[in-house]
Image (cartoon, rainbow, N blue to C red; front, side, top):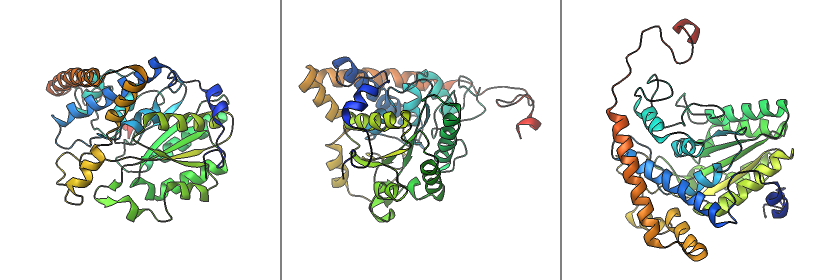
Length: 343
């Protein structure tokens, strides 16, 4: 069944309704997507050099960028933890501030009160996994969509989650509520095929997340998660549908985690041959080839840009790590004037 048959608007309507800042039909729009993917990969790999517990998103950039690029400032985002920092960068955050947030140093938005790589930089309309519990952001995002629907207007929420998180009960509850109330939200299952070491094909009963979404009456579509243009196209259609009052949609984006669950993961659960086969489908390489074919962007240009951006990110990440921890009064809080009010 096609996306149109499942209830998504047709391509003409989606193109006419696109409000985002990225137009993939132009060379400049495609270059903007490329730059976002390069920033995501460069920041991610710079963090790998300084954080042995880093949950890298190498290989999943097409889902992250295609899923969250070009949204309006009024839209809310709740990215999956793997790639959340890249979403912060796309929303305009300074990478030095994002890096400080990972290390919990004074240059972060919280002034060093919080640290971690599992959620984006705290900010307006940015929903993160601050509790450390998988699935919570899906419920937060659904609540945000309920709030936006009551405000009126046409702002939407885009929410990402992984294949492992898909089995959390709170995800099903959120899908049910979103469908019941016809909320303006787009769910994106970022299926990298492994929940730590458990293969998604063994863990998700009933086929895939598209089948589950259909059970809730939610329009759903499978998309190549290593093709940024395909992801963006389906995301745009789903967003346009939500803006027009059509309710929630779900994208199931099949991709692959090229690195381990975390940096020091021994990866005994999969073969080197499997990883090599998916490395040949690296989303950055694929998109660079597309840019070469359509826009005359050479492979040398692509490799040079990635290397230059990676060096820049490594420098600022190292400086963020070396910042002194914050020295604050015991009574100071990032959330309230006193600890009693914050607890």
